[in-house]
Length: 75
Image (tube, rainbow, N blue to C red; front, side, top):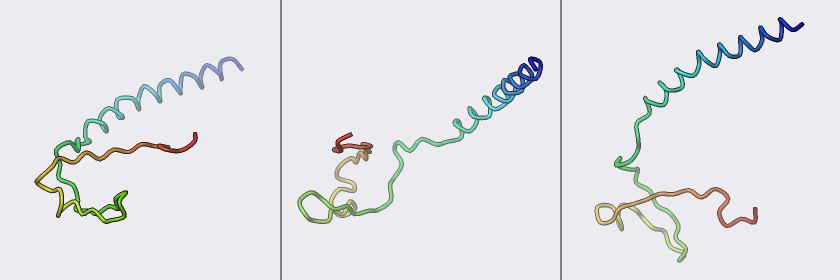
């Protein structure tokens, strides 16, 4: 029984040891999005009007898009 348990741990260790370098290769292939041009889009504003990025901001101001998960929620 103990040898089967040790064999399972050994197989798990070898699997992790094999997959760990592959995850690093996948991460290196991803290209950072900093400095890339974005798609043209429009978003609603808090003043009940539609903001068009192309007409109002493109080429005039820098754009930073952020995401706040669970922002303004009673978590």
